[in-house]
Length: 304
Image (tube, rainbow, N blue to C red):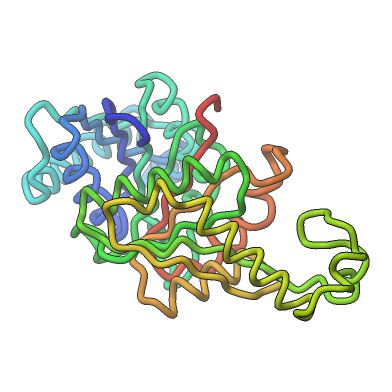
């Protein structure tokens, strides 16, 4: 989303969360002039089990399920005011595999889905939604149930990695598009006894020991300055705040701050400071997905 969106894929499973996802995807497609593709994947194994239970051929079960799904999708598209030319596909597959294969075949720029899915979780991302966030090669927008409208309050998680520059840029784009306010947030923890030995950014402990302020105050002052410098460009032209939140668990800190300020969107990276692709979604983002208070945009590396 750092460039104009061309193709948006929205996965729907007829949960209330996916209805909001469809509304958001239709809104974004209209704003960007993008092609919208709506996908419903019918679980092949579940359909086979249903056919066995009813003692009917699998092909007949496929035909019945596909026709029923298409009728329901037609109604949803009319209610969502989907743009002209919206394409619809019903696939028989394992849900996650079918969705990811369509991301690739359509060369989608953005994958949109409901947070909870058919399980209707009240907190955190559903299992398929969480796996989409981990495995999708493109940005993933997971939409909270009952939130089809423009975003008003955004929290952008900043860890000072190069990938955070894209997180900040996308948060600014969405804020400008929706007239939203952004909290650029850095979650930090006090390294405690290490501070007299090693400064927060690798500086000598001797200078820290001789400073007039306490090591903790020095650290906070450094983080405030660094965060301000990091988001200067992204903050231009929109309503922003720069926020530090202390928590040893970064994912928990992001979710707690978003909840405290009433955010309706978290923008976070899928790649952290270590530049190891598995680590951020294996730790920070994974924890955020487990306790989501609102919709979330998971930003992927541009070369994913």
